[in-house]
Image 1 (spheres, helix red, strand yellow):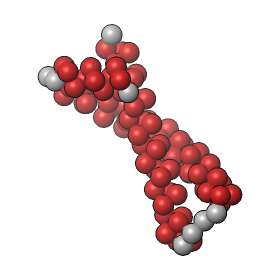
Image 2 (cartoon, rainbow, N blue to C red):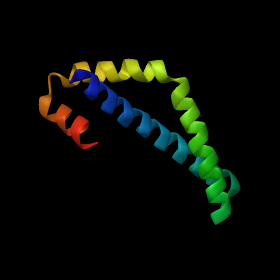
Image 3 (cartoon, rainbow, N blue to C red):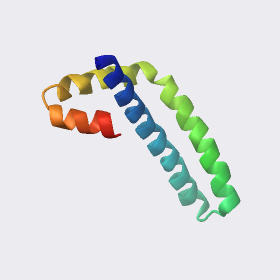
Image 4 (spheres, one colour):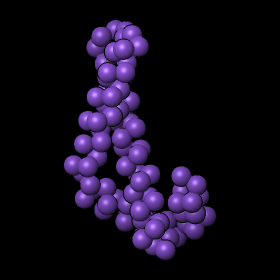
Length: 88
């Protein structure tokens, strides 16, 4: 069961990182350009997704260490652990 929990939490953490890196790129582009249209949004978002995916893969070992530490911490808080692992 622990391997499954580790895998699920890894997915949650990696998705979170990908989401926020992509959003940071999009908002940074808007700040630099002032405003963007729909086509620019699609291009920047697609580029942001692939860059954030590559960066999250680059830091794969660090993410795994974080996941193990979080699971060790959550062993003391069973309800919170179940909420995160089973519902996200």
